[in-house]
Image (cartoon, rainbow, N blue to C red; front, side):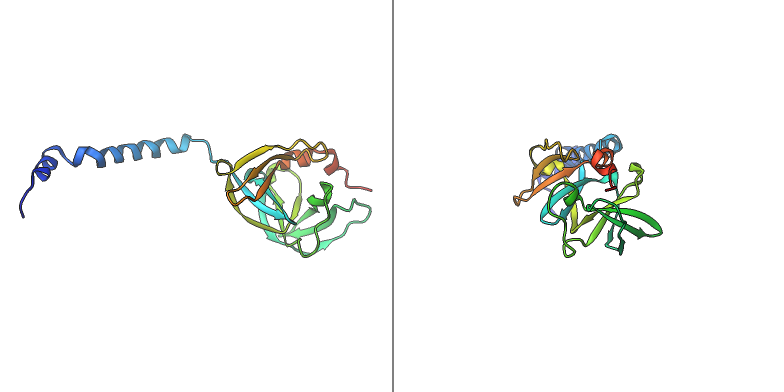
Length: 184
């Protein structure tokens, strides 16, 4: 095989312009810096009826298929009752009704998003369907929600396909007066 001038230059100087070495060095630096980088602002996207919501992953637990719900007398209509999820009794919330919207129908109530242990409340929200994770950096901000009747709704976002999603703050929900007043 015949050696060209470019091959001779590469043999004398290493890989062309040290590109591979530069890439390896940059990759190693990024890998070392990765543990120190803040986590991406990922949210769990879920549909409640016909409205899309975003749940902060740090305040949610698991997503489960809707178990049987035992109604609790003398409670507000948005408190659907108690459900047993792996031996843990959870208060089931119809967030749509609590928010002043139409109640979720049985056809729309297919799953539960269980509140995370960090909230110290044994509750879950009825959802139609959880449909994946969304990074807030990939969504177009539409502005802060400032509805005093729904202080747990923080900000609206739009996905590339035009779908609007409302970011929920479960900490605000749990701390709200509406949430703690389940009795009639």
